Image 1 (cartoon, one colour):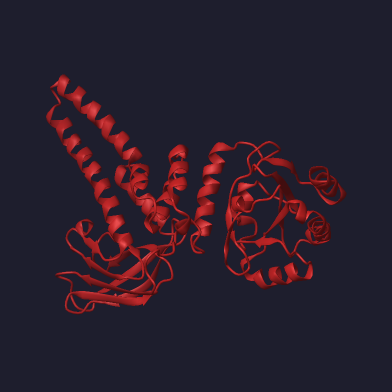
Image 2 (cartoon, rainbow, N blue to C red):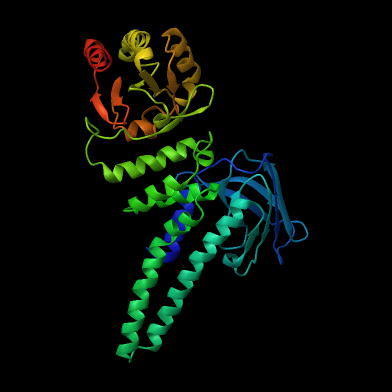
Length: 380
């Protein structure tokens, strides 16, 4: 993979990410594009990548006096790109609730400029730093050709080549360590952790540096879970079991409020994966009701994590009420594709994990009387 394709692959991965803006109170955006030499009537398109392969145009505008203008609403910043009929290439930018300006050079689209919006400022810094390194590498290749008959010069060039490639390899995470708390940073981290053999240690460090305001926004929760899941999969090669630290997660309750597992403090906590459509789960729920009524005052907490589908929210809410699940209830409504279920290696439900106050799994996948005996053993 060439350096430029590496950069493009990160951007394409980021095109699927949306994050909530930390500063904008409006959802309106305006994009003004100046493209000198473009004929009136030519079309420009805002596009997004749907799955890493397919691109979809989400808006279009027609040139008038060398300018294009887009107006609309966006709930959270998202990576997008602009294409113009008759011009090869594209210009990447962050679509956010701001006044965004693009200056596009039709004969050299890669030199086009983007301004407007805090996330675009951060993105521009990232892109500039990346281009600076790749430019040095391009120049190095030219120097190789000139030094073809000079062994000492070639040796020096090879050393610089290794150093620059190492700098490029670490550039993304080094940038994030300097700019951890922006919407663009979360997009970039998700893109970097989607690369094979990413730096797990650096990914953990960056995620730990990101503040709660950024991580707990309702539109960011699924992205954070995806990142946590990818980090976890690089460090755990076996199913979670007794003695392992329970992976942390954040997920929304039925009202959309973000709940973080590690902030729910109990002497004993049960994480129960279930769903409204799961008959064995519904049969098991009265066991949890009995346990909660008997042991909540002694330190028992329960987090019921539903694997209902996106179109089953009301069914989930109704099941909570009908089965009297009066404790913490959360769900991403992602069915078996839920990143938290993957984090816990859940492939069948009901699936319960019992965690002590230090976050260590002390029992797993107990049901019925076996579950009741274990809780009694821990809290009586």
